[in-house]
Image 1 (cartoon, one colour):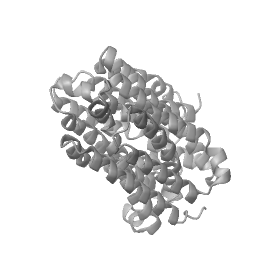
Image 2 (cartoon, rainbow, N blue to C red):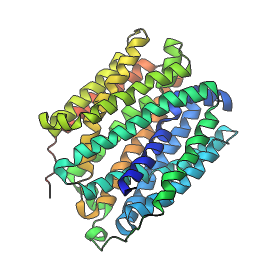
Image 3 (cartoon, rainbow, N blue to C red):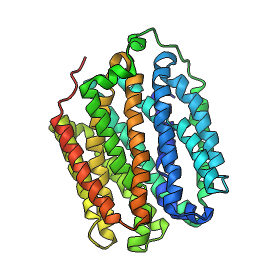
Amino acid sequence: MTPIVLLFSLAFLVSVDVRILAPVLPSISLSLGSTAGTVGLAMTSYAFAYGAGQLVYGPLSDRRSRIAVVRVAGLGFSLCTVLSALAVTTRQFIIIRFLAGACAGAVIPLTLVYIGDTVEYARRQVVIGRFSVVTSAALAFSASIGGTVAYFVSWRIMLLGYGLLALIPIGLMWRLEVKRPPETAEAAVRFADLLRDRRAQFVYIAIFLEGFLLWGGVTYLGSFGTERHGLDQFVVGLLIALFGIGTMTGGLLMGRLRRRLSENALAMLGGALMGTAYLILIPRWPWQGFAASMLLLGLGFVGLHTTLQLRGTEISPAARGKAFSLFAFNLFAGVATGTAVLGRLVDAGSYEILFAVAGLGLFGIGIGTALSPPRPTH
């Protein structure tokens, strides 16, 4: 298999892991004798570790190669995922998920960096769109299959299963010939230099806010579906899977969309669709409104997120791993912060406030991204 196929395969499983807890949060909370807000801290710790790891993985991959870093971290990801299935207390679960996040953090960001290395800028958003099909398929899988397994069997079996399955692409990566990258100007590019770049600053701030609002809110959609609509986690999982279906649809249409829309127009459309999706959840519609919201959320995500990813891969071609590590760090710092802050609103029963803040905020990110010019290509 080619490196890109193996990277996409492992990224699929990591994407499953990143989003798997949302539809089964009620089941895990009940099993560990805790609340949804408390168990949600496992997602906060996972996201924090995932993001912090980027500050190591990015620069290291500039010196050691993307594949070499991914395959070592992948082994740790598989082990920690299996161990998280065996946790018997909330504290154990949170700690192990922290370690799993630290290892998982190498896979998706370095796959995007690999795309940046091997695909020219003009075609890159289309390839990133295809990659979004892989990750969104994982979201649909994690929401539907995860909820199904947790409902009929156990969330522990679910984690154990894909943790062991990850060993297949990881093992095949060890058969690849990996060459150390040639010396580049990476060492001369410091994190401080990247953070002083105004275009980079906007991309980093925008991706932090997207992580805070979008994924911080998505964390609690399973609990919302249960409390507002009285749905069991099997049905909730199927409905949240519509987010992945929307993203897959947008990713498959990316080539056509880019022929008709500019980066800026696509970003504005994406922010508007995601904002609308959250605002739809505020009125007390029947469960069909929840389903429609998930589709819109997925479609909008492709437009805004792939635009930010595209710009993130071009911040510093000389030190692409290091520059993109800050992108991923800010994304997951946003996810971790959003999960923790919005969890307080969830425990207080204030879902309407959560959705209003997320919806209006995502509108703003889309507009801001559209008004920010793309980075000049090299």
